[in-house]
Image (tube, rainbow, N blue to C red; front, side):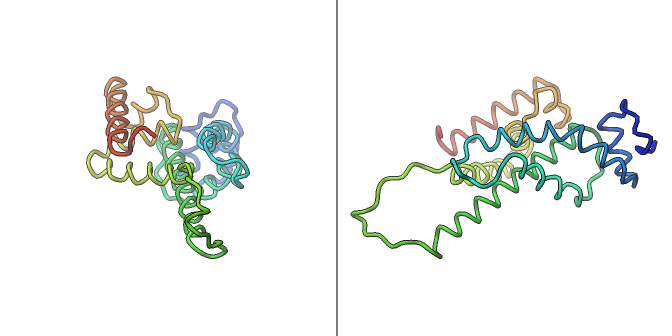
Length: 191
């Protein structure tokens, strides 16, 4: 089925399959169907960021689309696309945090005496890096629970979508998410 016919009844899954089959017009039809949902997910991920930060939800979605267009994935359906999109957004945010951390360790840093130092609260970038590290550790222990946390936290998936993405029942998806969050809480603390 070619996406060129611009049939409004085409689903995200239809368009993904057409795009995977080599129809470039399918991507043009796909973008408006998933853009708002990806933007909602991105806004949710940026809520904890500091005021004045330079990455907007729109920027995050555009960067994610640029990376998704180049990825070689055998798309299966909308949930699969959102799951991969969530992982791509996580990587973008973590990469930005790491870049900021590198800049903070030198460059234009002002040297101050210990008397001038004020206690600082944990900044959201550090929390994201800590969460990323915790998810990597959890994945070594139990990959499915790490994916459950990632898909809900970074992807904004519902329990039904999570169950579909993991290929398990809704109850198992809920249990995996609960246990994954508990493991991270024990590992990272209440923050």
